[in-house]
Image 1 (spheres, rainbow over the protein chains, first blue to last red):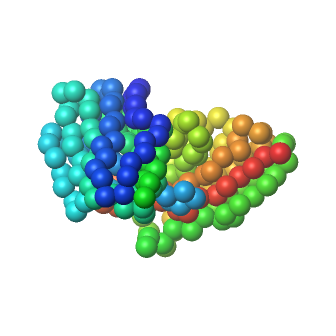
Image 2: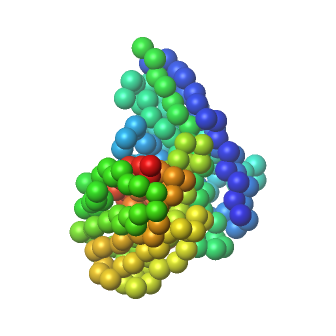
Length: 111
Length: 115
């Protein structure tokens, strides 16, 4: 099976930078996803990492270290609209090949 | 926006009654999934389908059945609803399992309350 761990809740200030961590244990790692989910809405895709390193996309970046079973999502220049849950999901090459989701991190951005 | 619609969006039902949730897509994607989302548990896969009449179990399939008689529709049935099945249910679609990062989309969710 897979074990995915991320903080339950984080708070940050508008304009600041926040890093949301995700650690995982899995056999046959085959990709890590980050999704954003606003309250009462559907999850939407943010990023995908399968190789080590940093993937940058505008204000959002995602980092992966396969040897450490670790990823983070970095949000820069925080805006109030970034208040949402951030879901980490891991896919393994065995089994169904469908990503397994962590419990999500609720980010609250304060003015 | 991807063409994926869930119905109903909200439902309250009594314990022991059957309930069917519908997911309808207009993308002609091969894969369809049903998840439930609960506080403290995140999104958990219930069942998925990889084609018409082809389905498989997910992580939390007990108490649920599914059917897919047409490419565009994937039904989730609770044969006898229990309070533990109170949850928000999300449908998702993808053309393949390999391309989740570019092709997977979620519906808006169905909030089900079993009283």
